[in-house]
Length: 199
Ligand SMILES: [Fe+2]
Image (cartoon, rainbow, N blue to C red):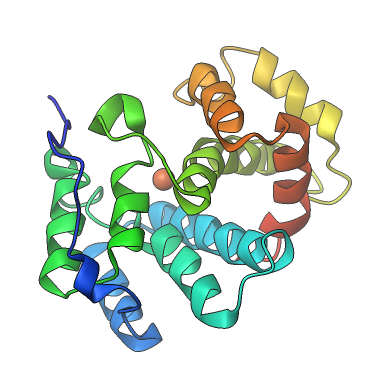
């Protein structure tokens, strides 16, 4: 099954600044994503994206919402139409005249799968958070205290264990951090602190 998108342009530049409202995003999310585990993953990535935009990029609230939206909807079609991931959500956002930046971030969150290179900081952070967020969440579930007391070195140990969260590509994690120009340790530490807030 190929998920290659075979294009590199998404959305229409005249739609710059157009975003879904919170309510519209929530409705789409609830209609499309039925699996609670996937819902949690998408909410976690959304929270990481918003927090990074605010705290590390010092972006205003409108831009924070764009980052959050990309995180919230990046896997929206994975639950019901995995063979059309992420073509279907891209087409839906294009139909709704969403800002091309948001659509491009979603289209490039798995360059090996979709054939679209992350370009902007938003693209790159979505790619970096996606896999690491899942691995760190899996680690929290096997710890008695969950996220409490979780340390960088514990996460790095799990990363070295190929059998742990084996579906999480270590190569993609390295590739994502390299592209973002951010040290792996910094991304991990950020996720440890932020991710526990999402229930
Ligand atoms: Fe994801």
